[in-house]
Image (cartoon, rainbow, N blue to C red; front, side, top):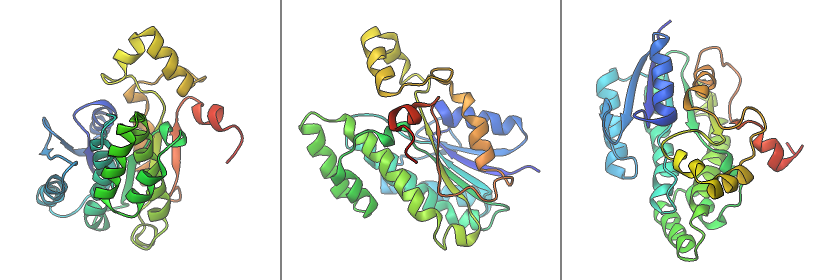
Length: 257
């Protein structure tokens, strides 16, 4: 049965690969991105988030079967927390009424293995409190002290924790909507390839994200997992951060569960 999906970050990377895979299976996919998509909106801004919800409602007639929040950036900059946390949460919350009107509704956000790396507690706490300006201010402090990499890991840790909290509430589980995250390892995209081409940077990347099973992944290799988690077949998996990381989480955290 054909389903209607909305995917943010659909113009490139995991979002594009997932959209292409779902369309090949006969599903309808509405793409959203900064440009070159069905909906062009900047999820770093309140206006862009509102535009996404408004346009999605207009295009779909008020119903969606699944939402995949793929849009994300990895800059050592406060903008990262605006997109990766607040943009993703606004996407999922803003489109939840459309999911409630859909058939076997499902929702998913793309997290990261970086969520298990060191984070900045102030960024994470402000994000989970819903205080965007405080999270941005904390990000600026982190960047000023030369630890800009913590902004990305903090944004992904925060959104993963939000999934855990939100998934079991009446708004999601109570409404029959599974909500999960997928945490990729290193994905071969235009963003990561220049780093991997530099021997010194490649060594640092592989130390931070060791992937003993098959090494680095291509975006299309994540699409089947995203498709299953957002399919009617997934009836009971919710509130999970499913690492698709070639074993990196097990290497980094051992047997702790």
